[in-house]
Length: 467
Image (spheres, rainbow, N blue to C red):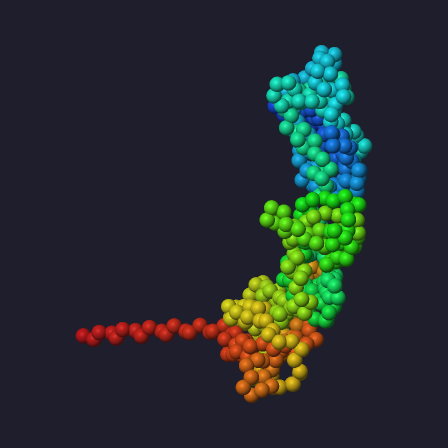
């Protein structure tokens, strides 16, 4: 009998513990419950909101959340200002009632709720709708009365009305193009008869037009960053005079193709104007959206096509290199990077500082001349690098091997020439570089080996004294 009672008690204890663990510990504290009770929309979760319909004195605006970003749906379609939407949701989620009147206690007309000037309807992922009607400012202070469809009237601090009462321009995104260097597959720039075509090839950018060569990575990525940072200063009506804006025959047109397969962005730039000492450029996006933007990027867009070639022999960073082979004067040294340490072919540790010094010099070396005649003069030396795989390797990055790039440096054709000739396996051109810089890469290759420690000489024992 006792054992059965003990068993029942044990089951009850376990059940009580489970209830405390799974239910009671997740219940709000008294203070949390009080704060929730004060909220105007206690069940609203901002992360679940996917739709907004806002009515205010400026009109009605409908917004939808797609793929994590807010977009305007009505009265026009286009990207929304993510900050403006986020600020409004934050205000509504935290909106608290300072006083609550039950149904029939006060006249809605006294608070401007018979014809509310503002309304917001929020829709969540599961289809739940939250409606909030907002009245006029109260006679004293800046409070606002709101109703949520249950007959009650709630008085709240009216700061949220500033976020709710925005006009169309404030709901529209002021970003010209949401792009970043990592998300761009190609750039196409046209300015009169000039044409520049740049495409991404792994970690480098390649020029396809006006010549085929490596593109200047800094120039390309700085331009993309400038475009990403452009801000719309004034939205224009779709019926604006294109000729006056210089967009009937744009000075420049930029087409950006994204890596994610999204619709390309086409930007046409026209005439310029000055507003309060700052230059602005007329712009048309994707053949329809018209606005004035700041003139970021216009200097880079105006750069001569031939200057888009990479002056750097091959763009890489020292930490991108996994293996290196350097040969000159009959000596060849092979090096591997393992766990951040450079080692020689025999497994011994290399002089890491010297290795990084030469890699740094090579990564920063710039060509002073292009398209030279390949004279096949004697070699100064050659360097072969195996780079780590870039992000395009995906899941197999750990197993993949990056590109192999070989640099061959040759003596000047003229006996007293001061320019070495260099070819790079990734480029179809012969370039010229300062001779002293080329020679410095191959000077004293033994310095790449880590010096052996000099053994400490044994101490000479003191002579034994004799009696």
